[in-house]
Length: 84
Image (cartoon, rainbow, N blue to C red):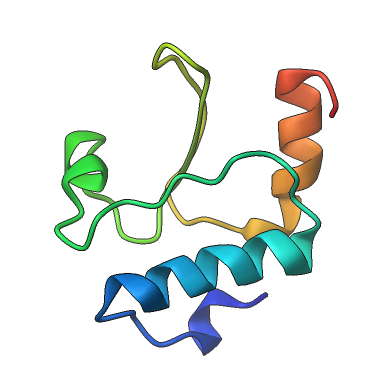
């Protein structure tokens, strides 16, 4: 999945579809949380474009990427969170 090849979603259903595609193409089995169209969560975490965060239950940020590179997320999740 190459982010530069993806148009910016303008509707929530498009954003959810992309999250599902990311999950499918990368083989991610963990929960993926999708921000609302107002990007309030992104803004609360610094407002970086195309940023990615891994947040443990309770809100602890355990990983942050200023420019998300989805291909590495499964390995990063396994390393940080201890496998499946």
